[in-house]
Length: 167
Image (tube, one colour):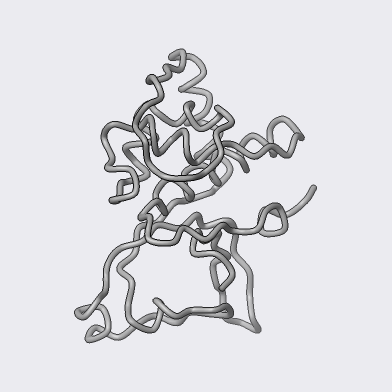
C-alpha cells in the first residue's frame, strides 16, 4: 500500500490559517485509504465552510472538526477561500463511533504546535526541539498530521504531513 507521505503533495495555504482543516482531512483520507483500499482526495474547503466552531481561514482546532463536522470533508469542493455557505452535514451515530475507533487504532495524530522563527522558514529535513527562549518568542500556532515514525540512526523522528506547501 502506498505510504501516506507519497500520496499527495501538500498544498500552499498562502495567508489562510487552515492548517487545522488540512491536518484533519489528511487524517480522514488516510483512514479511508487504509480501510477501503481507495485513494481519494477529500475536501478541506468543505470542512472550512461547514465547521461553525472554527473560524475558517482565521484558524481553528482539529478537535472541533472531530466533534461532528468531519464528514463534511467528504464533499468534493475545490480549496479556495472560506465562505461558510455550505449547509451542515450530519453523520449517523454508528458511523461516527466506527470512525473514532479506527482513528485511534491507526495511530495517526493531529498535533498543534507553537511555530518558532526557525520553523517559519523550514524547507525540509529534520526539525529539532526548540529551546525555551525560541518557544517564548513564537510567531503563532500551526497543526500537523503525524503520519508515522522513522529513525535516522538511533534517533527516532515523526513523519508529518504539513499544509505549508513545498516552497
